[in-house]
Length: 71
Image 1 (spheres, helix red, strand yellow):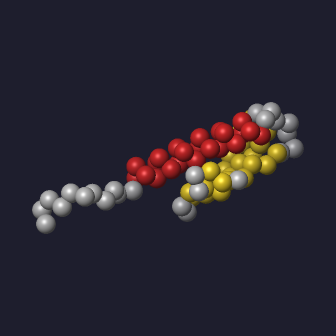
Image 2: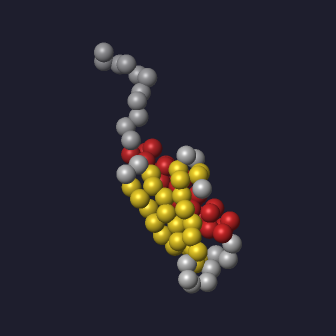
């Protein structure tokens, strides 16, 4: 599945109602597990994690400024 340009996977585990997920933002691969009966809710949880990872990436990246003061 793709969310905001990020490919992610969700797979059922042998444990009931446990889903394993994985996605990659930049060079960082994130994996985990979530507990829910519905795959749709598991997907929404992963999408929230993707949103958080993208926010963290944006806040750590130097932003280009249109300010040319000092040139």
